[in-house]
Structure formats: structure tokens, C-alpha cells
Amino acid sequence: MLYGIFSDIHANLPALEAVLRSMDSRKVEKRICLGDIVGYGVSPNECATLVKKHSDVCLLGNHDNVALKRESYSSFNIYAKAAIEWTFQNLSDSTADYLKSLPYMAEEEHFTFVHSSPMSPSDWHYVADLDGALESFAYFKTPYCFIGHTHNPVLVATNCKDPYSEVPVISEGPLYRPKPDEKVLVNVGSVGQPRDRDNRACWCLADSECNWVEFVRVEYDIERAQNLMRKQNMPVFLIERLALGR
Image (cartoon, rainbow, N blue to C red; front, side, top):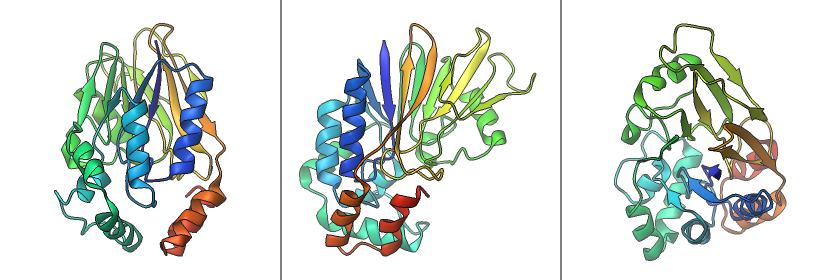
């Protein structure tokens, strides 16, 4: 089965629309959203509607949880705080109800899905270096684990029985075919706010039968996304970063 796994939309409607079209063109059979539908951008309700309609599974992200006022946003930077405060005022009841229904983690035969880390999904740990990646392997049993949260697409593969027994493979793709004795941790990047200096939206295509995974980059109308934000007087930093991919 062909899976389309995507994360960190952050209320960027043009990016999400482009990714969904890309998934259609690649004949995706099952769509998995890893969370953070809202935050930063100004189309939280529109994005939630599309994710609900087109996703087979959707998980809760930290910005989603904060938007529900279920936890503090004191650790957010000033730009994220401004965006989430705007979201508080503009989140519809139907979107809030949808976000409340989302789980932290999901698992299928070959795949584990989580927004931040399989180690403790509700604590929103960042898997931002190799040590963190290797530590994560102890917390999922499936051949693959897909995560988001850092907005940086990267894959780490290592021995399925002992992650520390050999030098791990670190790949930024686009395509990787694991060896039979490997487990794989995949950060799928971000749809709405990439931070790897590539401003194109990013999602992940995975084949559960042929055993490969691919990072897919998609051009989208960045100027349209920026104009939507300008109309809502969002911080200039948040607007300009979309074109920079950071």
C-alpha cells in the first residue's frame, strides 16, 4: 500500500492544497497526518476541514493542543505566541472539536506514527540530533516510525536489534530502501513551514509492500500564503520565513 505521510501544516492552506494534489498524482492510497494543523498561519479552519476530509488517520500536534488551551504556550517564541493568540480568536468550534478527538500516536502493521517522539508523545520532545534518534528506536516495535515536529526531513536507519551496534545511516533522500535487518526513523518534514532552507512543501511517500520511503518536495504559491497572512497582520518574520524555508 502507498502511504502519504505529512505533518506540520501550520494553517498554510496553499501548501496543504499543493501537497494533497501531489499525493493524488502519486496515487497515494492512505493518508496520515502527524499533527500541527494549526499555528503560525491564518487558515486553521480551512486546513482542518481538508485534513479531516482527506486523511485516514490524523494525530495531535503540540500547536493543536495549545490552540485548545490544554497546555501553556509560555515556551513559544514571540512570533509563535502572536500566532497562537490569533488562533485562539479565530478557531471555529468544529475545528476545536476535531482537534480534541485526535490521538497522540497510532500504529499499524509496519508503521508507527507520532508527532514528536515515540519515547513520550505527549511531552513533545524534539528528535533533533543523532543521539535523540538512536534513543527513539527503543520506543517503537514496527520497522518504521514516522515523526514530525522539527520541520526538517531526515531519515535514520540502524540495526533493528541493537541500534548502537553499527554506524547508522543518515539520509536526506530522496529515496531510501532499508536493508532487511534495519529499523527506520523518518522525520517527514513540514507541509506549511519547512525549515531546511528549501521553501517547498514536504511530505513522505512510503510503500509498505515494496519497502521503500521517499521525501517528496512540492512547489506551492508562497506569495498567496504570505498575502493571506498580511491581511491578518501576522508578524513580518512569520510571513517572510516562508520564502526562505527556515
